[in-house]
Image (cartoon, rainbow, N blue to C red; front, side, top):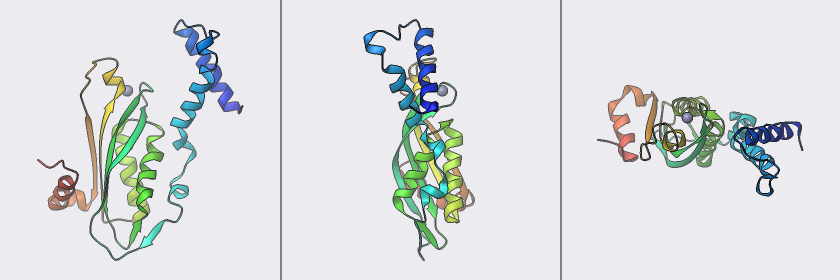
Length: 189
Ligand SMILES: [Zn+2]
């Protein structure tokens, strides 16, 4: 076991005691280690970098029309409660000579989602990363997510979906561009 893993495992044992459980009982014997591994997996975005994710998958293109990737599944942990928030991200950009391999957009979303987050910062980090990598004329990101910290505790608002958006460049400056994007993701009013 790595130092990091055994440390987190030990802390989970303490958490189990803290909530009044017996970490030695049969069902819980391997739980601290499993939970530690799960937490490492859910936070693996810290080990990744934008360069490594993109890995040269930038292609020359004279397309200057909006590229849009909709409904990217998103699983993250809120930094306030360490509880999941789950939803979808929609990402669009307007290329200026370079396009990004399609799976890379989803991987960028994943890298930032697999860190402790608040939804607004996650949205901005994705937008800025896509901007940085593609040098796009504009980037738009919308995230719609349900937060377990709202659904399972506190106000227990089971059906509330939180929506956040970041618009950069052309998406910020041009109402038409922004509207086109919102229409394409089914969110125009
Ligand atoms: Zn929370």
